[in-house]
Amino acid sequence: MSDLTVRSSAPAERGTAPATGSAAFSPLYQQIKALLVQSLDRGEWKPGEAIPSEIELAARFQVSQGTVRKAVDELAAEHLLMRRQGKGTFVSTHHEARVRFRFLRLAPNEGEPQPAESRILDCRRIRANAEMARSLELKAGDPVVAIRRLLSFSGVPTVVDDIYLPSALFKGLTAESLAGYVGPLYGFFETQFGVSMVRAEEKLRAVPADADVAGLLKVNLATPLLRVDRISYTYADRPVELRSGHYVTDQYYYRNSLN
Image 1 (cartoon, helix red, strand yellow):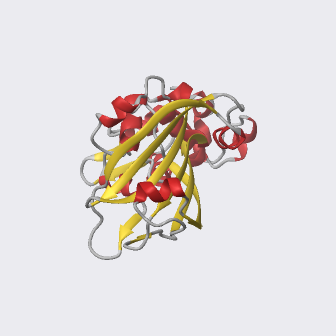
Image 2 (image 1 turned 135 degrees about the vertical axis):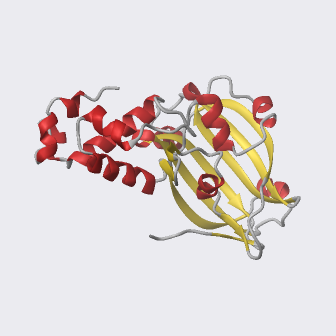
């Protein structure tokens, strides 16, 4: 790991941060946090794996255990890491239900959320239009993977998702590989392509169902739907997914928590 930024001035733990350009103005724990994120980004610790203990990390970076703990606490609060009582700290994975439901925000009006039944309708490579390029930080015309899928709950079609991914990160992704996978889509991306979705930004609005979407969701033309436009990011705030979902909300609502 490239931890020279901190090691170059080990005594800085006693009160001063290492002098490395703009990083010199960051609290030391923020610099440790940034180095931890770099290791996560490089895949030094895989999703679901334990990271070294706070004592080991403190020795590695030549800082106090308290400084490491503060950095790890922030990463846990941001859901990049998960603490398990008596077991240690682990890299968050979409195969954990509590992580999975952070990104599937639809909940039934009554009862507990149920697993969605996913059906891949299409998966092909296309050229990025201006919106895709802007959202994914690509050039117009760059190749992207376009996926359309239908999510149903208890056999009732509920969500149509149109998903766009940078083709360079998802080489070999096909409709067949998607259809053959059982589990959360983000878990598939994480396991098969090493791409972890760690946060997302969304815009929500009400729209009328057009003929295409109405047919898939088995609703009348112009039925009010909730449209959710999402950009998902991996480590270092790199956008890796553009998604537009159309949701039927007569039996469901879109939940959110404001902390």
